[in-house]
Image 1 (tube, rainbow over the protein chains, first blue to last red):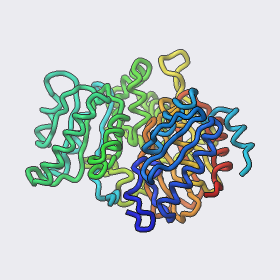
Image 2 (cartoon, rainbow over the protein chains, first blue to last red; image 1 turned 90 degrees about the vertical axis):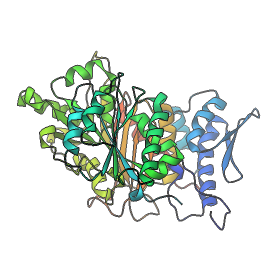
Image 3 (tube, each protein chain N blue to C red; image 1 turned 60 degrees about the vertical axis):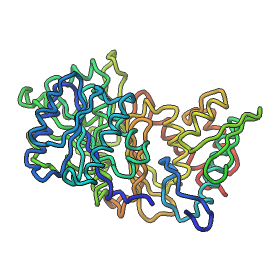
Image 4 (cartoon, each protein chain N blue to C red; image 1 turned 45 degrees about the vertical axis):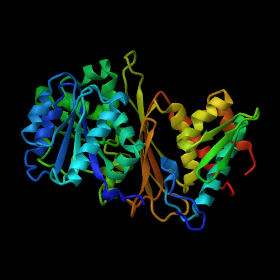
Length: 100
Length: 351
């Protein structure tokens, strides 16, 4: 458990299992912030849930629990109603155009 | 508390098409394993486990998986067999083996084995993935490639490629096959069966779970760092037969001069594998991460990624991130542009 954050353990999904000098909660917020920059193209929003899971919301009010980032993209595709493809040129053009 | 990688018992996988010589290789590797250092799991088709009997003479702790093909439907079998072996080892009913070798059926795709160990909380705390060894029948390789998609899955997922029946083909054909395999999977070590030694450390390797994972990571990028074949330097490597069952497989190495933000990279790769996992046959690489003095090694098979491993040093003087991809039907430029865009646009995201 992180004594400062009160979070038990770490994520087991591969991308969340890296040792980092950042506190666990700050790592989570960093990942959520970056994911939301991507998800905003699909009008979706990710939020932390109790430091152990995530909640993904659509503009129509649909909400789904996401246990880790391994689950995020299939659920996001379901809520968005379309494929989420990082190789899609239109998506990459949009990502390049958003302010840093 | 998570175990360190060297605490884990490595699971070494021997795969290869039917009749390619997997059991022969296993026997050769274990002939002098008299101390019970290796436990063996065999998964095979058919009601009578002939291979099990053959290996039984030299490795009495062999466990036979009964369900035929190692696919999603038998993950339970594999898990149960691993748990049973571990339990007996802890109770000292069997010698305290240092590794497990799993010989798959000739029709198995190794990726689900990867998934079984990574996905199960109990298994991933006790077992680590060792090297995947694919046995290639030199005489029938072309036929297997054309007719059986499993062959390509086995070759692309391998860390070591062992050529068997080399005495049955002329040297010229052998060289061509070796060159062809190197194009399909440039990150794998290729050797002939006759070169394999008893208890060969190269084959009985825990891969990234070795105490020095740097040497394993160095193998992945060696061919791209020091191309032995001038004609391949700087070029993507394509293979596959026009009009055959399988579209061409391409392998290439992306090199990044700037440090990579891990969070952005993780988002990108998980997104890519979710959408294109079936076409990304293999990803291996070392990354120079921002905020870290030492590199990390990543490797994945299809949509599965092994947790990254911290290396204690760089394998050579090059400090750039290098990622080897083996893909089917995806252009190198598309992947490179996508990763560059993610790193550039997300890498400095404020919290």
